[in-house]
Image (cartoon, rainbow, N blue to C red; front, side):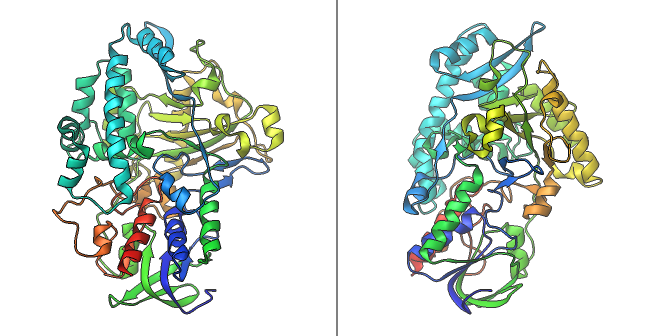
Length: 519
């Protein structure tokens, strides 16, 4: 039960963004209550022992960190760290009838050699360096703005100060830039994957949703690096909950919020435990849920498009490409069926209502970089985790029979992986205490049911460019920080806010800054 009847701020949802907001506000001396419908905090950023009787704590849903600003970690004094991966990616392929692939990482000389061996010249590597040099400069200019008041479109363009990059990423479909820059189909596909994580689109989608997804994937930390959370993703949200509580915030779990009533100055939040008053309400939930709580018309339906799979192996499988050590190939992002044409074919097949014939996906092994998520016995025996994220699996494909469709897609995805292995993955899978293979899969509909992600959309809705569409964001603090809703004292602090999406804490930070600015 909440300890009080009224608070300065009530936060709906105990995911990482809500916890960030709670910690900032409590540290500023505000009375804060966090209400969470589940029996634990963390939302999609949690660690779980997913397999019966197995001492492995997996990042069940979200699994890598890029967008979390070091500023938030430092401001809140979080006991949390990330570790960089030594290999960026490995993409297996078959050229001239022989198994080969592209390993990106291990130093510039090694990566240059890998490009030359795959493509026959230095052209693609030179283009790669030029391309990602440009995105690195973009990242250095855009990422700091995410924890500042929301810039206008013109303001962000001036900040970037690069008309060619602005035109390529903010005005034209990303596919045009990819095709102008790279000639090799596999290299093009590796680049494009960052535009399709959780986003159902083609390279040439006129909506530019693929551009927005790509932007958020290459600006994180000002570098675009995707790092491994030490101790798993739950280590972050546990640290955030601890920081909020230490600062004086109150957190109540097993308490679903059912409604918000407000006159614009004060509010009442109704939950399973009764009703509490608040000067301000911060909603760390999807815009769909915000509309339901306020009794408003819901936004257009959102749709996720991914298959998330967690696995535990007794050992890593051997590769058909014997030049590459599996410990290197799986420590970065292991791309499967993600050539440029393959990605387009998979999109078209899914858009036509069928599962992709060659499902695209990417895998990485958390335990290679951070074995702390495994029990000591598992580490000694050489066990490893695998996290798989499948692309172009829109929620619409699962509505008729979610379980059967998920199982068929899982089987097809693992079969696609097997084409690049020297032994079946099934031979390497661990078993739980009941003798079942250690494989756990989640469809978009599963994510909607378990986490409240609308249509399974991991970003809560389509990502937005990180600027205000209007010439001026507005005359309130909430509008200036990009967290305003239709009600003056109700703020959106979840992933569906502008500059939301990913494990970042940015919407939580910005909502807290808006509250503190208003006084």
